[in-house]
Amino acid sequence: MSKVNLALPEVKIREIRINSITGYQGDAEELVKASRCGLKDRERSFSQCMGCGTSKAACMVTLIQDAAVISHGPVGCASCLHEFSFTYRVNAPLRNLQHPTPRHIFSTNLKEKDTVYGGNIKLANAIREVYERTKANAIFVLTTCAAGIIGDDVESVCNEAEDELGIPVVAVFCEGFRSKVWTTGFDAGYHAIARKLIAKPRQRRKDIINVINFWGSDVFSEWFAPFGAKPNYITPYSTVNGLKYASEAAATVQACSTLGSYLGAVLEQEFGVPEIPAAPPYGIAQTDRWFRALGKILGKEDVAEQIIKEKKEKYLPKIEALREKLKGKTAYVTAGAAHGHALLDVLGELGMKAVGAAIFHHDPIYDSGREENDQLAQRVSDYGNVPNFNVCNKQEFELVNALNRLRPDVLLARHGGMTLWGAKLGIPSLLIGDEHYSMGYEGLVNYGERLLEVIENDEFVKNLSKHAINPYTKWWMEQKPDYFLRGGAVNE
Image 1 (cartoon, helix red, strand yellow):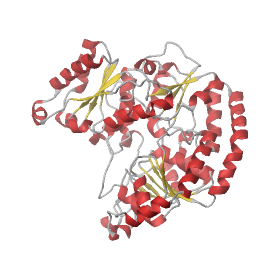
Image 2 (image 1 turned 90 degrees about the horizontal axis):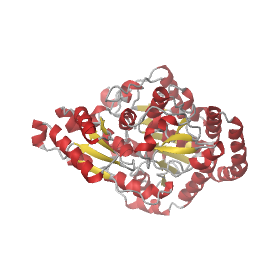
Image 3 (image 1 turned 45 degrees about the horizontal axis):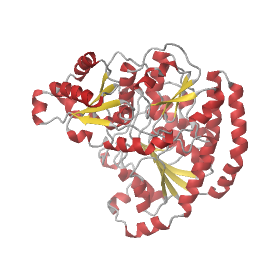
Image 4 (image 1 turned 90 degrees about the vertical axis):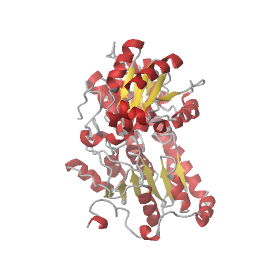
């Protein structure tokens, strides 16, 4: 089990904490075995692009309803944060939020002079001005590479401002260079929330279950109702007060273990909120385990069995009909780690063949230390191996190479911009931003129907492929996808 330390202002990065990697080429079964006995990262001699931990931390704290966010760095580092304001507005109806509040996003706009003389005073003044403008219930300060390089004492400035203003002013240490596993940014955001916002429980409530997630539709209210509970979503659309008493919940569940690994462990180890010992509910086998694990934690196993029985009676005939239609179809998955594994579960349950995957990083074990939370291991056990399994931190040149070789019937993606490459090659491509869309028994029906729709309506991508220009050379398309991984031809 990963040990958390909220006394420290900075979270330990994933490479050190749980031995996460960004370079691997092989198959899923081999990766699962290696993860149990010692896994070594394979570095790249060439990288095309990477994600940034700052944006991942911002992804979490920006979506808190009554908080404000300051990017402490050059204004360009805040240029990507507007997308979370867009996400907040567009997805608010999924949570029945009728009047979403405007997002409060600011930048200290560090310039060359500030990198010489320091930006502490500029940050202190910015915090005061942001509070005067917004009257936010909490202010988060995101550190950028520039602030980290010049050594600004962000923690002290935030603590002084907190004493002055009487609200939490929270430093989030998430510089992009801190970790090559950009999901460490999620951990940084949650570490900051746990340090400054979550309070010790006044009582233990049986009617609240924490849900660590992104911004998916509200499926958990229906699922939790038979247990006499309701979801406390963390963090999209949560409030500062709602986060404060997350410590009182009966349990914590996750929509994505990549996202919630650290916070789930913090809530269990520091605040006594048990994390459900099961991977998220994608596919029938894993959904069965998930409901049973939840029922056991809540002391309501009979309720869990009744839910499973009723859901299967309703949805299994529809799932079986979809299996018949999708049988023999091939698919390729590209996504973040845990959600990518979840989509592979969905494919296995629907009877489709996963011919490969490009997953953005790999966690050999999550912070809970429980093997039951390992969705890739469950996938291999439930539905078999996945060949051509590539771990890459969004290296699109590797994705295009693999797609060109494998030519699946459909490409499944989680992140925007990735489906473009399938479409250019004439491969029907599906991107669904709602991570809850394929959850549970009903999720299999939802996703199966969309898959059929995409595969059957392929005329556009076929026409596009006739006119699209491939930016990669013929030479690259003839190489193996792992050519630039250490130990490949270029390093021999």
